[in-house]
Image 1 (tube, helix red, strand yellow):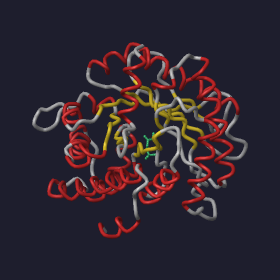
Image 2 (tube, helix red, strand yellow; image 1 turned 90 degrees about the vertical axis):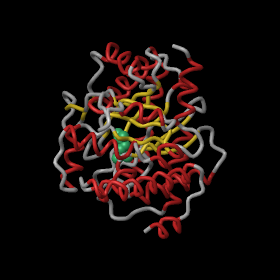
Image 3 (cartoon, protein in one colour; image 1 turned 135 degrees about the vertical axis):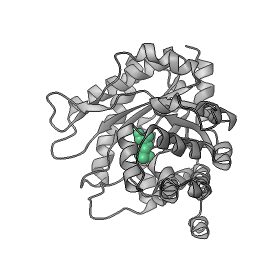
Image 4 (cartoon, protein in one colour; image 1 turned 180 degrees about the vertical axis):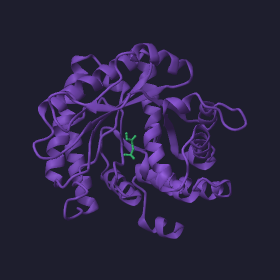
Amino acid sequence: MNLAELNAVAEAMVAPGRGILAADESSGTIRKRFEAIGVEASEDTRRDYRELLLRTGEAMSKYISGVILYDETIWQKAKDGTPLVALIKQAGALPGIKVDEGAKPLPGCPGELITMGLDRLAERLPKYYDHGARFAKWRAVIDIGEGIPSDTAIRTNAHALARYAALCQAARIVPIVEPEVLMDGGHDMARCYEVTQFALKQTFHELYLQRVALEGIVLKPNMVVAGKKFSTRAPVAQVAEMTLRLLKACVPAAVPGIAFLSGGQSDEEATAHLDAMNRCGGLPWKLTFSYGRALQAAPQQAWRGRSENVATAQRAFAHRARMNSLAALGQWKMDLEKKAA
Ligand code: 13P
């Protein structure tokens, strides 16, 4: 492991005003997204759609530091034969790869999941590195409900995240460490805080035990928000305050950056929350975005699978990328959204 090299990549992923495009939806997830806009999912339509995003010059060269790809996508070529990885590099961004193989039921823990994919990971990573990937992602899924999460789910997922992170660093790849506490369900913010705290504490404990260099990771957490079925939404300032309090209590200053997931927040909520946190200033790590839905919902709606809509979809993507770039600098304003509408 070359720590200086890993640290340089991690710093580039969270460079000021830049964030990560999570375009690593599995074939099943992208099928659902396409169904919602009336597009049939095939290797070609998935490629066309991802190509549209990666060819959005303004977004890719100014606001996006890296793109997380799915295994199918990292090997694909654009319509004109250019490898998609080359499009990312030409824009000055870093290619990344989701390496987990999804979450499966955790034995003995009804309703809970453990993320799979460690078995052949050591052999897979060098192939991704040779193809240009400089960072990877692994997502642990923690659900909140009646009697869950269990200690078992938190601990086994934290252990797997650290196993993955250690293997990545040995292969010169920066791991995005993502212990996602879901915002499904009817819990309040205090419960989200408590569960996320446990998940982060356990994750950093395992990272320490497994000798992962914190200078060479990027953390991808959820924000502290109530479940979608909870009666009220908290003000932006309260989400920002609680999320920062939590992160300060759990995330060592050696971590270069934190790139949030959007997790089902609306586009503007995800942007407003990130902006409010960055306005607080004086933080030991960079705070930016690693959004999937909050960057892609708008371009997907605009595209709807039609080539005549490509330019409009690209404008929609560039707009969200710019809004989140401003939020990563603490310079976003709601007025900018209205003007674009
Ligand atoms: P969302 O921003 O849609 O939550 O996706 C980010 C991601 O990569 C989840 O693993």
